[in-house]
Image (tube, rainbow, N blue to C red; front, side):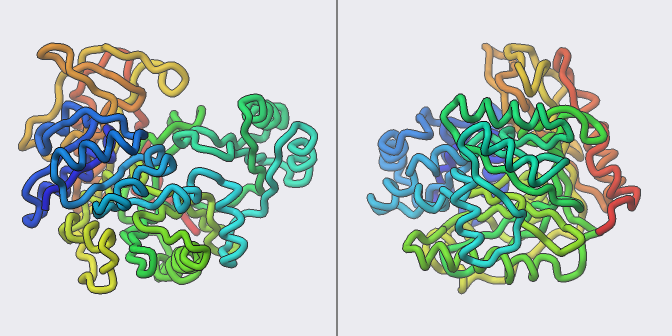
Length: 420
């Protein structure tokens, strides 16, 4: 197979790294890609949200499969145009991607499929929001209805802050979803589907707040780990049975089958698993640790989903090791990340930890920062302590002026402090 991967972040770098290890994959193209991806793929210029531009590139490169990484091209309908022109695509249609593109739509689908989730209310103006917040009480949860790169959610005990976030969304012409706060630890589960069959990957946990101890504003994600030794037995099977499969069945019933990754963001509450959100693609940074542990060749898995043959695919195989990823962020992230700073000290190719690029660019012969989340450092270990030690030793050796990272990724799990 020759595969085109759309995107330029650490998630896509992780996907490429896994695809390159698949013996059935002959060649890879990344568009637009980043400097780190050049190790595995030819880089090509493309506007990811322009369906015609992506179609042009797919034709020029003669690829057998297109894997769409980010959410924006999916919501823009890039997968639709590619499929209409005969390409196999891993990623949902624009209509199916509304599961991520509109939280209100996702709530509607969950209600129809009897999927357990937080009680919620969709609001479009200040007084509605104030009434809804009064009904839910603190902690207040306010979500931008549309795409917000993982940063459109405010969870706060401060009513004024909650209302201010709602008002900022209204001012931008968006609705908000206000919902009850869900207690319990959070879990991310990726479900590969061809629109009928669902194959779940192993779960991970990520860390959204910018600072240690979950302090500071939300980000796109500052780190993750897998597996979750503290998760209840049978959790994955339960989530597939009560959440993922009913959702996929409901999307098919509506005439908008979902092909790709259904990302299920969960809270393991005192009343059982509840959906926090759906995404229509692999999550970042959870992909970095989940794919690090996947032994099953990724190309054959994604191709089977794209071709509607997932029911014929073998059971997934996994490494017994633990994986941890830690994100190195630029100065000022998430509010106002600084770009253009030189990056040095990356681990050697044979080092026990490896680096996935996200916000990087080439400046002559130098590698420089070019985004908020600059790098993801990934390490495998026999246990969480081993993986954490390896990852943090590597990230400490990287120099990027005024950069920052969380020091507590997977620490509570390592200490056995997470309970359900």
